[in-house]
Image (cartoon, rainbow, N blue to C red; front, side, top):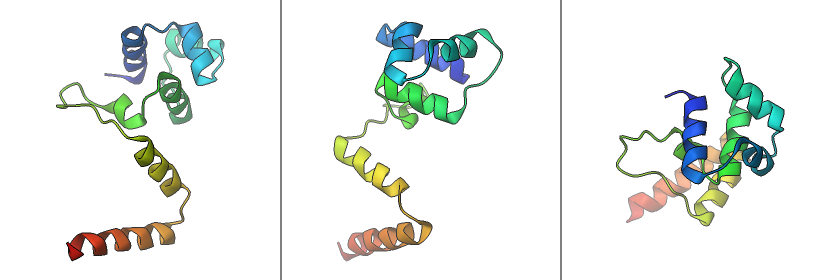
Length: 106
């Protein structure tokens, strides 16, 4: 399934119009209209904004219908991943080593 089809599917499931999605996502209505009426794929930042407007994660957006269950994150998990994105590669390596050391200690 392509991204435009997935967006329309989610809009239908949540009973959200193009206009409402524009307001929720912070995108202009013309951006969404162009997305649906032209043969172009949305950019990752556009998909991220749409996901935010729909109240879902990128993982949920790309979740295959054949998956047994969708991926839901708690507020704490979302905060952790947002903090993770702000780390440098070196800091991420340190955090990974700390986590692995705790896991191996159990």
